[in-house]
Amino acid sequence: MTGGARAAVALRARLDGRPGDSGSALVEFLGLALVLLVPLVYLVLVLGRLQAATFAAEGAAREAARVFVASDEPAGATPRALAAAGLAFADQGFGDDPADAVSIACSAACLTPGSEVTVGVRIEVPLPFVPPFVRDAVPLSIPVAARRTASVEEYREAP
Image (cartoon, rainbow, N blue to C red):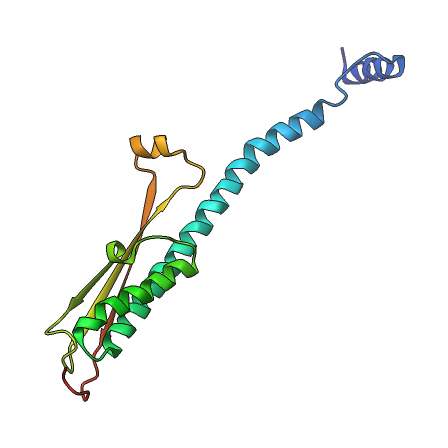
């Protein structure tokens, strides 16, 4: 059968009211759209959460280091730095405990003039919509880390 004959048979079938392929394009489009769009939407959600974690980690490290070197005495510097990191976490929607996620190290005795304070932050970002029983079996989280170093002013009074 040639191409013209096939077209004539298809046209005759359509005019006679016999069921053909009508509506199958819509079903195929919807099936293909679901197969492609669902993973794409999930990828956008994951990337958005990772970007929020990056903002939270960078902000927490920066502010904790700034608050630590601006403190007057070393005993009160750590709780203030942890509070600043907690605010940065909460700002991006993370409920991580700053005491677990933040590490503070001093190059010399903390808050001595000219010394440096390094603050490290590490956040575990769980993949969205993964049930807890799967997370218990397979680690499904992505670590995000940031580090910031701040210098204590050289001409400040020693604590």
